[in-house]
Image 1 (cartoon, rainbow, N blue to C red):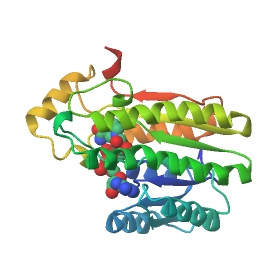
Image 2: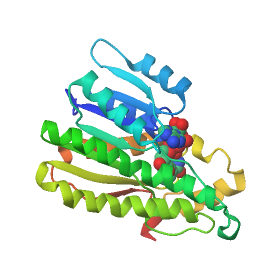
Image 3: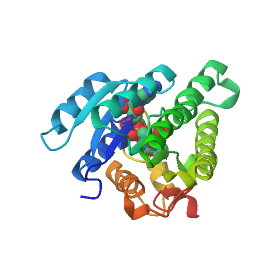
Length: 247
Ligand SMILES: NC(=O)c1ccc[n+]([C@@H]2O[C@H](COP(=O)([O-])OP(=O)(O)OC[C@H]3O[C@@H](n4cnc5c(N)ncnc54)[C@H](O)[C@@H]3O)[C@@H](O)[C@H]2O)c1
């Protein structure tokens, strides 16, 4: 068990990539706080995974609200005694031609997908400094590395996450706090529910491996980055994309 005795926060932990990462980290022995706005799914997952051996709790958190983030970190420290890992994963999708994109929509996507990652890092790193170190993992995307039409706000936010990850890694390297990001290709999660079959087939064709990724394949990469197996890995943006960006 690679995360025995560790405690983790996973934002957006009620669904998709976050849910599978909660499951993987619990399997590896971590205590986990699931943070999400979907209370029904978050509570259900926590109830399913909480056991005498592993403490799994749920808290309602909107990652674009700094008070929620502070309360989330405080709760994790109070419940688990310390915070070792945070996976800042909560995010929303957004597609619109840029000329039709209302400024309010742009701000919403930036506030959840980029500001939320900053706020989590700000408060989680303070807690990690108290206990002598930790591992921050951010969820970026292939769209932090390459562009795609009609995704201006999403792509700008993920590009921000990629370079924020590097800046934080450099800033806290000497304090035993590693900061990395995982950059998924298109993954079969509810985020893709709104796409029609033709669009899904198009996306499949863009991945050299000829399929979309599975959320558990991202979870494995996140657990690796969280674990001591990645003890010399910081500032990395780990692409898990079936070759999408290699072409
Ligand atoms: N699915 C993909 O193809 C794909 C590809 C690259 C990156 N990503 C990224 O992976 C992350 C997870 O996405 P997913 O595909 O698992 O989607 P998902 O919709 O299954 O899960 C996202 C979770 O985030 C939660 N959430 C949304 N807004 C929130 C907020 N303001 N505060 C707290 N929680 C909030 C949702 O309730 C949900 O549980 C996102 O950051 C997304 O951008 C996904």
